[in-house]
Length: 84
Image (cartoon, rainbow, N blue to C red; front, side, top):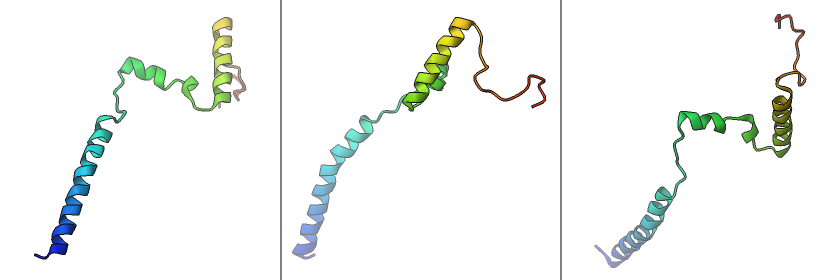
């Protein structure tokens, strides 16, 4: 074995040793979490969308539904005969 191969091997070993703690830290700090069934209900709510304008409209609709005690009538198509 020549000196060049030995130096290259040591360099590779040092690089791997330096990257191992970084890889371990990334695995340990990953944001994986589980949600129970009752928690998923809130995560899939329409108000959890990313668009700010949609959130504002959904909050207003939710307040209107709570105040009026009814839902629907917000631009839905159909004539009420259940044929659509």
